[in-house]
Image (cartoon, rainbow, N blue to C red; front, top):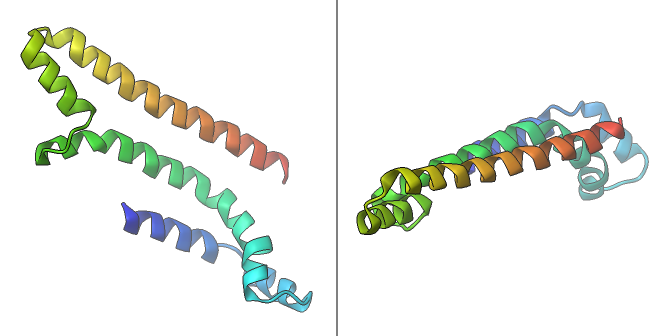
Length: 120
C-alpha cells in the first residue's frame, strides 16, 4: 500500500507542467517554497481520487489481517459468532460497519473534491 501511495504522489507531482516550477523560481521562490505553495496544491487536486480509492481498498482489505492473528472487525465478528451461535446477525453487523466506514470516507472525499473544484 505504501508503494502505491508513493506512486500516486509521484505521478501527481510529475503531472504538473514544468513551467509551473520555472515560473515560481522566476518569482524568487526557492525549491521548497515552490513545492509548498505552487506544485503540491495542484498535485493534491489530481491525486485526491486515486488516494481515496487506495484508502477505501485499505479499509476493505483490513479484514485479511485476521488471517495472521491480528484482531480486526472480522476476527472480532468470528469470535462473537463462536460464542453466540448467531452468524447472520453478526456478519450483517460487520458488513454494515464496513459499509458505513467506506461510505463515509467516500462522502468525505466527494465533499473535498467539490470544494477543491470550486477554486478552479
